[in-house]
Length: 472
Image (tube, rainbow, N blue to C red; front, side, top):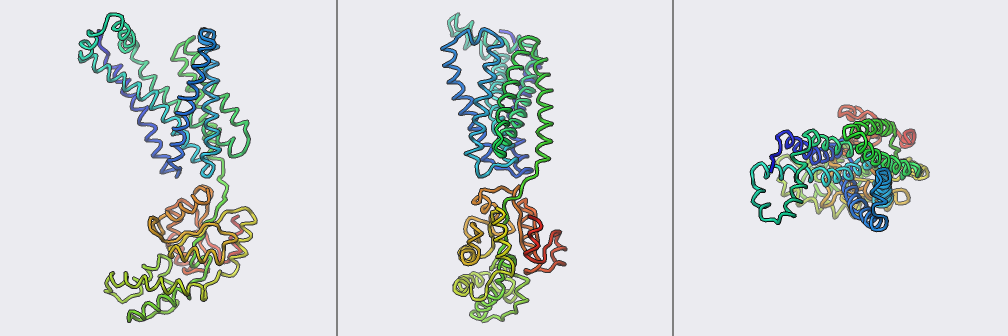
């Protein structure tokens, strides 16, 4: 048995790294940069397995049984049939998955994530595992570990095994490098096709779906025809040029596509509700119960906005043990649950603003560091006709400025960060918007001054609720 050259094995190794590493690396980068959802990539991977590796293979089995060499004996027929089948099955799977499985999360960012999953699993299963198998077999051949195993086979089986392995030492080394390039181009192509089908679903222009099928068929068919007539190098060159042109179109379209704002996430205290008096009353009640000095409304204005524990910690005398604060919290909750509606009311103009936003078709949510039960009660009392989601502090969801409440609200609304805006009144809200990847509108009728908000980096301000409408 001949040995496999070092150059060939290096090519196998590079192809394996490209097929396995590039999808993983791009998935991580896209998750961080585009804020896409991993579930979109998982849907893409699963759809490829179901439609390309199961359903499409069933069709091939039926067609081969029915037509045999009439289907495979002619290069053009074989190439066109294979390309059409791949285009129809994979693009139809893409269309159905985006339309139904990604209905609530479909965005251009998640379309890219879908393509990474679709192209990534294809690269792993077709390119990565093949390269790994070739490299492992080559190492065993060069180490002499296969001779003993082959000697135990009958001559016919042994000859068949040798014929299957022969390309490892007979094929030119460059072919093993080419396979890595081919996987990379196919991976890029799948992302572009995913974006094209996304346009079909989002805009309900199914000509984009037909275009995706046609392009998929063209790339696959021409690659086979050129490889068998002019050679694999020319086929890869044609594929490279075609994918490059397609990628430029998709990147340009992706960048120019403005994400339409559909969702507005409001902070509660100091933004939509003037809760300052009731909060002050309840905290002072707790302070008196524990024999501590009370404070004025203006004193509390500076500490509200980061959760009630923070407000109490900043209000108790210095040196007060945290265990005492732990005892004060349930006393506050008991009092506030009873008195949270005594003087609390929406800021003037807020209800008119929400009614107008709803009339214009916007989805709205309220997120707060207040106790979840209080947030839901207040929303039900004042804003339920316009706001369908209200989330407060509760186990399993980190408080603002962590993005958890925002992400939870967007998920309930079926929205993405690319189509949402955050509106709040404090430094906590500004940080929450940044951590969530949302633009922030800072209101000036709440708990913080313009000067303070500017000092922490806020740049977009409104002085009245009516002014908010100029952004929508």
